[in-house]
Picture 1 (cartoon, one colour):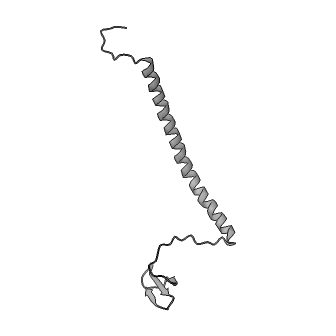
Picture 2 (cartoon, helix red, strand yellow):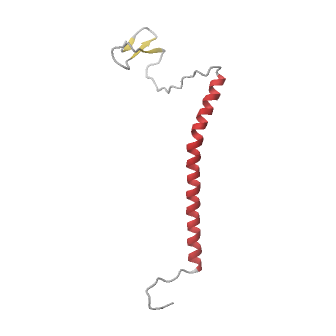
Picture 3 (cartoon, rainbow, N blue to C red):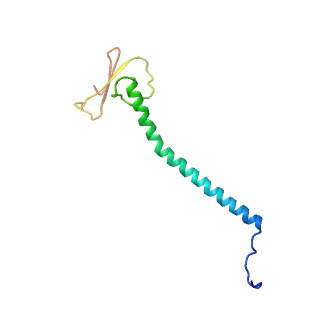
Length: 105
């Protein structure tokens, strides 16, 4: 090899070894993180379907309503009614246990 060329010095054996180890660690981390994301995307919907199937068979009916609800400030019972014949599309009528009607009734 010619000494007059401006080449960088060759790395020592230790530097080459640690560089190779670093590369293997990065590749393995990427492999396992990709596998984890793929499993999550694949298994999560399967678990939800399986859970719904079990819940449907326990109650004796598979016609369960999976509506999510929020908190309500007023305690008591009420009935929520929606009608396609209401004047506002999507209008909701709430009937309280004392007979009061609130909303689009």
